[in-house]
Image (cartoon, rainbow, N blue to C red; front, side):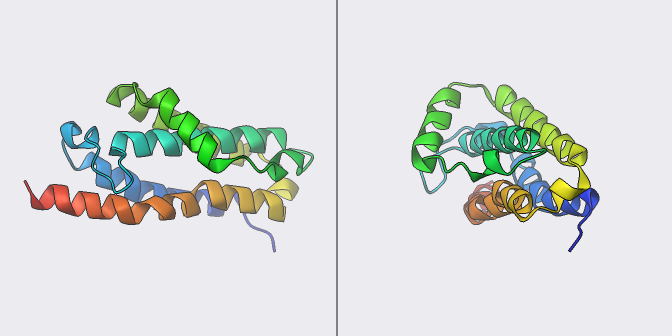
Amino acid sequence: MSISHEAIIEKIENSYNELVRLYRSVPVTHLIESSLSNGWSVKDLLAHLAAWEWRCASLLEASHVTDGPLQANPDVVALNREIHKEREEWSWEEVEYDLRAAHQTLLETIRQLPADRLNSKSVQTAIAEETWEHYAEHLPDLRRWHKQVTRNR
């Protein structure tokens, strides 16, 4: 089944926009507090998502003619730990900028994929796992956090 670049991007944007809506509706002071269930701050979570979007864009860029790069299976726990350690000292402004830049780069990379590559099951799986499925993994915690923060104002 053929799917368009814009259909994929629309699906990504629908999920991504909820993340943005939730974090932008509260003061920055709440974003940098370690208040998520895993001990992270919202800033940490967004830095994490940005890093995975950068990774996805890089893999998609390298997979214009082969599924090889998409078949790598990283040690997710170790990679998440490394991402967190690398970015934990970043300022809120750096994290938000990086999130926007990663997201725009990913969308542009998807737009540049040849149609036959976009329709590859491996490509579609990678995009789904690193975007809307990844957001869905974290959205319940972010929604709970948002509800708690806005209730306590």
